Image 1 (tube, rainbow, N blue to C red):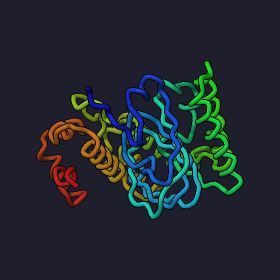
Image 2 (cartoon, one colour):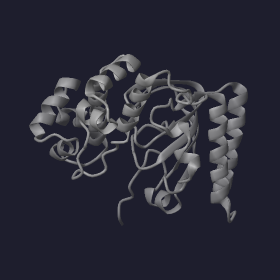
Image 3 (cartoon, rainbow, N blue to C red):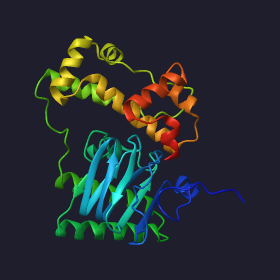
Image 4 (tube, one colour):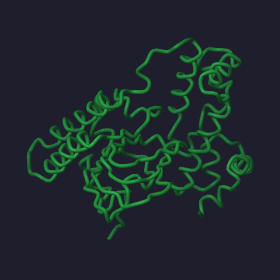
Length: 287
């Protein structure tokens, strides 16, 4: 019998997910938190109750009490620590399942927005009811349950936006903040790396400046003024985050990962990775 490819939600057969495009799961106190692993081929949305820290795209985010979480597959993520057991609900779905504007236009699924929405007791009660209804529909024989589930997802997204407005809904203060935003969006759109034979195209500040039709000095000045960090630091951090995700969640060789990230020789990648992380790629993969 062929092996079933596993996901980070217990009891879920990935073939079932690909067939239906959606899965909802009740997370009991005895199971792992639903963002424990960093698979990047489906979106995740859930309601969790616990005390934990998640690494989301290089940011450490704390969840204390009850909160909604939204995970974009382009952003590497993993559980850093968990103080107690976690309960709640989690659903995952492919991009084709929810491919309309409700997904692509949702700020909660944009890579630059905070994916955790803390809830009050009243809000938690409402959201719990929504996930319970969605789970009941999923387990039913209702002929149009896919459409109804999409409606529940969209309603949860809008409620979350009402509770925590999108971080990028504001207008840009000046030209520098606009350029910095365009750079950040362009940087994120380079990822995830899906094929080892299609290497990263943009690796230097000059590459991004050329595509944005601005002088590299203006780009560097705008990014530093807006974020407090130089352009090269943002690029390096994102390349390292992708390298870590590929080392942990793919079976590519170190050489394949090196080429996919735009390094001409694996030795260059090894030195780059060790300089920024203090560990070699092989040593990191074994941890």
